[in-house]
Amino acid sequence: MVPTTDCCELTVLDLVPFGLADPVHRYFALRLSPPDWKEWKPGQFLMIRPQSFGLEMPWGRPLGICLIRPQHLICFFQVAGRGTEQMAHLRPRDKVRVWGPLGNGFAVEPDTPTLLLAGGMGIVPFIGYVAEHPKAWNISMLFGHRDPLECYPVDSINEHIPVDTLRESVPGDLDNFIFTLQERIKEYASQKGLILACGPLPFLKTVQGFAKEYHARLQLSLENKMACGVGACLGCVVRTTDAWPDAAHRNAPVQCCTQGPVFWADQIELA
Amino acid sequence: MKHNELAVTLAGPKQTLTLKNPILTASGTFGYGTEFARFGDLTSLGGIIVKGISLKPRHGNPCPRIAETPCGMLNSIGLQNDGLEVFRTQKLPNLPWKEVPIIVNMYATSAEEFGTLAAELNAMEGVAALEVNISCPNVKEGGSIFGADPAQAAKVTRAVRNNAPNKPVIVKLSPNVTSIAEIARSVEDAGADCISCINTLLGMSVDLRSRRPRLANIVGGLSGPCIKPVALCCVWQVSNAVNIPVIGIGGITSAEDVLEFLLVGASAVEIGTANFMRPDAAFHIVEELPRAMEKYGIRHLDDIRSMLSLG
Picture: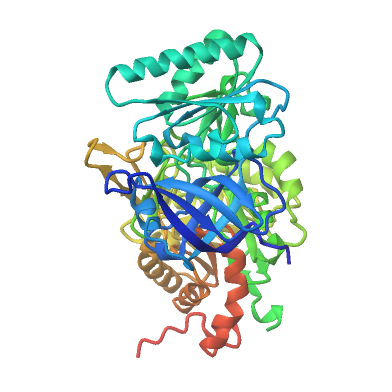
């Protein structure tokens, strides 16, 4: 029998509300017993399915992996729908089924100046990225968000690297954020830096546009809806461009879960 | 419990397929099989039915293609696949086909094309059987058009039968018909060795806020535990209508569900949406089956198959 630790039952250690913890801002850090996985890379994700989903909600939910340490696995989520609503009621000792680590993870180039661009919950995979990076002093980060800063796990990042944060609360803020994105992307493009972005689709499209304009080296982490996370359901596909390395799948749909979730920006078309 | 007490023989008029246990994986829910090798031993399964294959690669439908619904899900993938050549050269060689039957689900847009595809598959040593998809609700050409008309279903079945004389031919039926028993009799008469049912039910989900359908294709195929009662009913009707073996599909998530399908007349089953609920679902059900049999006092699968008590 092949060991099946990649799909395992983990125990909830605790679920900690972040920030305001009011009915509108519902952000949580979820700590689970550690899985017996050989290795993982920042940018990879897992699928989680609490026992309480029963037959009612068949799909697991994809969550970015924050950190895996001998004592625990940490992930982070915002209540956004039926599944995460159910997950907000997890209690210590509850059982969850988890499979992973899934997907490819971010490029790590220790000596290259690296810029992290995060929009909202897109900050999550960068927690592990910064913590695991061998030369974190080469990294900086720009973080755009709508809800108050304390809703997001920013502290786990700015203890390692400088983080510029911009909050969108009035209409002009977004223009300011986009302008700042443009300036930073231009700057990193000129020094042949590495740029990594994670966040909502409009944000990724903006970043992708600037990277194309300034010929920046950019990776995008996508958050497509998925059912299986392992390449089977073909629900999460993204369309590739002429730049896709495998000729047979150029200008064709490929699975975000197994070919991504991290893609070089020039190799995919965002819908 | 020894393996032979779980073994299944699907004996058709022309060809017979032997399985070490009645658990197969349903097409479209298990990739090409290799995606799941990290979650269990592929060779422990009764068989692997791979993602539907067409002669040429297909890109499928636009996104969103999937939507979760209560106790189930909708999909409108549109038969995205890499095509026959990639399957032959890159997928099949990586599968343990000597130790576990690999069944190819096949899709084409005409009876002639089904025949061509069948002839190609007939020549592949690693292919144990063919499953003819005449029931996909998500494609404009072919698909359920073949599956809804007894004459068309028979024509496609004959085309595959005649061009794949060496392989067991399984025909997968749609529940989106007036009488599934009539279609079943028609494909039996046309030479099918076995019938599998059911494919997905045509369904729809909408978003009140945006007033848009949740699938780009507007409608899609419903699967998962919510369709199990429909599937049980169809398997019961079909197994009463034909003399060839029936493979049950629809909402199976446990070994007890497997036994329920056998009770109403199935000889084997396919695990579908459950593979998304946990990627080791099929392996897990294989492991659980002997325990479930013991719980219900079933020594051999023949003790339960078609033993529905109506008295």
